Length: 232
Image (tube, rainbow, N blue to C red; front, side):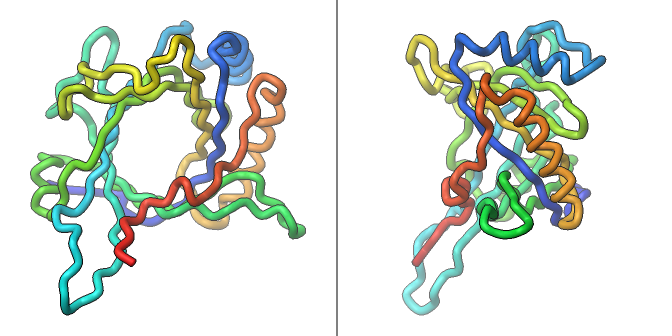
């Protein structure tokens, strides 16, 4: 088992909800902004994410336990017309801090979320590695939809799916079984250092302006993205 690229960096992001009836309008607008990106209108985002918690969560009688941070692994689960087998996926191990809230009442306005991210590329048996660290799967899901690169940003439009069989992405069924559930729109920057977050945020604001009226992209309440397991 080996890992790499494990330095802490930062990511900027915003989210929005898109009614199903507006999906094609937004995809057409984004395709124009994406320039020469080869996009045929079919789904090209299939990501399987598994969230891991420590195996032992209870407190000891004699020692106060510090809050734990959840670990996450993510990989593409589908390519072309076939599901990628679990042991052939390129899993990425990562952890995220709670995002910083937007800043609106200073000279340096920030209208996006940003958070610290530490991630590693993994070679070897990621499941055996996390088991050795004392972690176990807590829950998992699949994101299925569309992704396009615009400038340095990644734009994803997806719906969430739950798995009926553990670790089997092919068993995914819609999390929301209503007739026309909305799509989640997620815009994320590449990882950058703390000094680079302002430039990434400016790109996000510019993109948000281009599609405003079709979908409103906002900074979500930072508490909703808390990644700590709290014991007090």
